[in-house]
Figure 1 (tube, protein in one colour):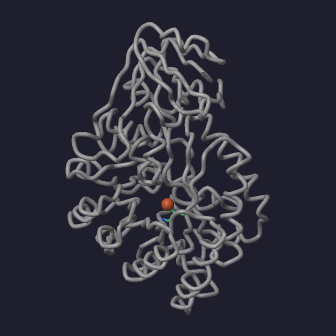
Figure 2 (cartoon, helix red, strand yellow):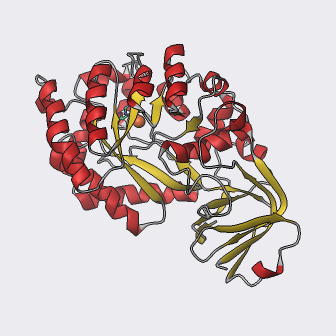
Length: 413
Ligand code: NIG
Ligand code: FE
């Protein structure tokens, strides 16, 4: 036995290998006065309450949880992790009331990060992202989806995805790569958007697939960016090359992206701030995970997605950070969890499922991650808290105490 975590006051986890919507999103299994044994391969061997059985007492490493709360490691299912520079100068513009899409239309926003990302080397991008990952890990994030989308040329998109690949083996956070060439139309294709879509479909997606650099293909379906029809074309092409579809939809304007989800079999739809009833229906029929990003609403001073209605409609809701230099320069999934309670009005149980099992399902990892159960990866957080409510009630502090990835202590604060 590799490891034994003992003296756990409360262990809280969803259960299963599929996303949970409806009433089951709130179903959390609680173990009290508990222990958890980790097998030599880094998976959970057993969990129980009360006395630790004899067979686990000789584990190579013993970790005293101090009577505290243990949850699965947090899964951040939506980040734009790899980028050059920052955009702090946009804060003043935002405060003056310049809209996000206006900044983009003037060649700023995403396009200014594209210039910085193109100017950086693969190594520089990886080093910068490694700093972000170390901070995320400190706050309990053990798995993170990472999108490209600031290269917008064949070489620069590959460079971003190769930076993700490099980070996969050089630090503990498990990364899941997404190709987001359709994040914006690059300046050089401003007058030829069809040409850029052709470039993505004929060169970028095949090259990404050939090098095995991404698992998902994503599109920013938004006014002035990509239409629903264009999104469909790009995502169908991704599917042909084995990239599963994701979509940024209904972030600012409802232009029909979420309504496409059942038809294209989207694994997740993301943002969803102004999702319509038809969009919510499509996600339910398509078995799509609704990945909601409350810290983006907070930073953009926008509305909050109707996550409560989505859960009630039976759509599994995940919550992620959306970490990026423009619309959400925040790495703390805990902060997004707080907003999940305060603004979406989800319960602490629903929020826990949203950042563990449902988030794992949004990146097709629900069979191995997202809950503490025999056979799943032993990714967990020991919190400076005695119960689940406490970590949602407190905000603005990092309450993670010890972070464990596959049975290895990777953070001890
Ligand atoms: O998810 N919406 C598009 N993409 C990001 C923002 C990227 C940026 O502003 O750099 C988002 O909010
Ligand atoms: Fe995003």
